[in-house]
Length: 378
Figure 1 (cartoon, rainbow, N blue to C red):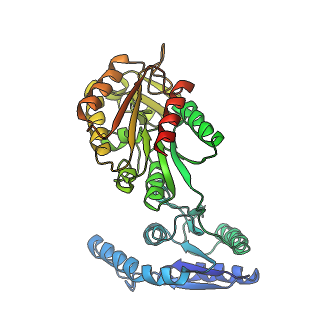
Figure 2: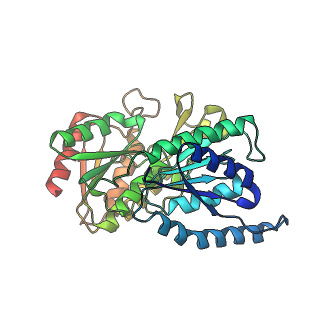
Figure 3: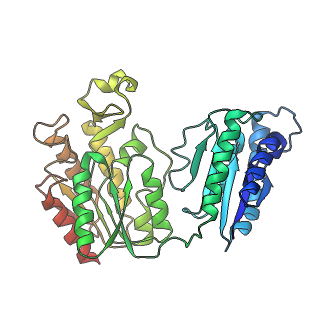
């Protein structure tokens, strides 16, 4: 097998476990090289400040070594770690190519969504802590070895360079994204769709920065509600400026900007439940924005779009911004849409085209307007 397997681990605390994994790989004919990311505490209990500083040093010292080891090679990077080791490993993996082969074996003492939002990392839960070998951990490591061997049997050809159009989506307006994506594909364009749920937008922005797209259609600008007000999300400071910075043609719609995204209804603060709201599913609850929040959001979005150096058009579908913002919907509000329209009208600079349509965002008519706008730009 022509493959380099690099094992990232804190040897000073996980030696037995990493030796077991290396041995299991050897039985499958896979060689591995261990890269030690130990802090060098010697068993001493450090202050939080000293520990964090040591973690930063390990990341800095290991980053270049890891990048050199993976450059122009058929490599699989595997990390074994808990809280501290897992954090170091995630930071190192994040600096590798977005879709390169990476695996973290961990008890996952963290919410992994932010960590894998813009980097393709295989997460393998150990179920038990990595604190001595036992039946469960050995089985998990055996499974890991089999998966790693499978990855080694293939050669990664790299990210496709096919010109693509980046599109954002959310289930509350899946019809909108589907109509636009299918329409563009029918015209011969490749499309790449991202779930704008507070985490998918990070990958969307990173792909733009990496030069993966020839244009974007940001159907679901809902993530701005999470960044400005409330809702689970990861840090993505370039989410609404990346395309502008690249000078890409971009079509923008206010998909999902009319609601706040919460999780299970029992976790929603009581003050928000006093507003119009609904259960999108057992896992998610949507709460309507206030007029003041909408005005603030629309102003922020318009000012971000004002930075655009490429052709840009904001299309506002006055028939509704999401599935329940329609006649008889749980959060229908024509006045809220008017607040958005008035604010962007007052804030956008002349070089950003502003188009108003009477249809709902998920109507085929809206998709036709968006597709025509993008085709004119291209």
